[in-house]
Length: 298
Image (cartoon, rainbow, N blue to C red; front, side, top):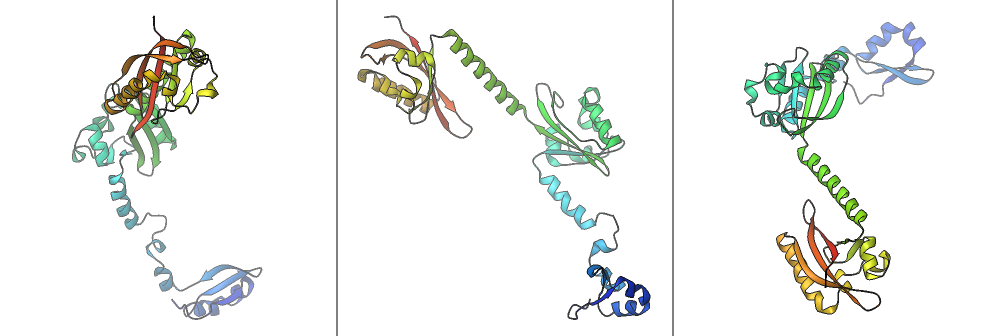
């Protein structure tokens, strides 16, 4: 294609009147057709058009190079992906999906979807798959017991020309974490309702991040007064070393420690208490500890 010459510009009206001349001109360099003074169309030769790239002659068809590049991408994804045709047969499946259903990929291609996911026929997911294939309707939701008992699976249905894609992700661990968090919230609510159990949340450096009303009442101060204070500072000097050793053991071993101790009060007295210390463990490291404080009989 000629690129060194400035393209000819012609108005739409002049282009129509002199089309034969401008067709010949386009064989040597592009002809820009303007409309109200603005560039609107470009006339080029057929050879130049074909040199534009593979999509020039492909119409609406997806180029082979794009399909070839998508195949390794899908296979490398950590999420399980099953491509299904309109007859509910498996058109393609990536290794992650084969691992999830515990079957070889070669044994599943061309087979009914129920071969890989037997429970799909009796699940509520059937309705959404029908909507996917008939109306290209997307779906995303959490489905229990789809692949195996007591397992939660995140399912995404995506419409495709071949039929649809089913994306599967095991979210059992996340569901269990949410349940544990809910149980912790309920437990704290029960402790607050009981009213006589103090608790404090400590950082890894032993400073108090939060404390409940029962604990601050025992000490005789408000919550702001002990926030960012080392918890051992709330104990008489003679009990601080034992608490420090117990906390270190909790962080080192992960075990829950229970020790007899005392709380120093604002008026200079001391209360006999029992301290229960447990670690707050994050995903990658320790987030600190929780201390439960209960009064101990003299």
